[in-house]
Length: 89
Image 1 (cartoon, rainbow, N blue to C red):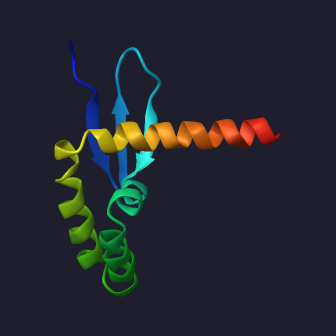
Image 2 (cartoon, rainbow, N blue to C red):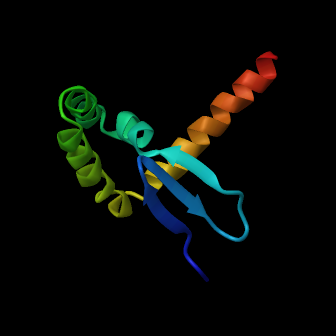
Image 3 (tube, helix red, strand yellow):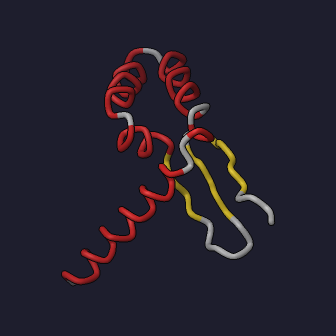
């Protein structure tokens, strides 16, 4: 069994496998959802110094392999939100 591919491009994580459709999730959205305080530091740092902001983002990205559940939870929440939007339309 092959594991999903994970790639950091700019501020986007791409996960894909042969059996599922490719989903693009912004790294900062994952940060905002699961580490809001870190996201606030990142957001403020990007206003002042992009290098500091990217440093925060990269430190966060290095934590991703230790939290595979973050993607599953985030994707489920997106799916639920979309279902609610579809239901209301």
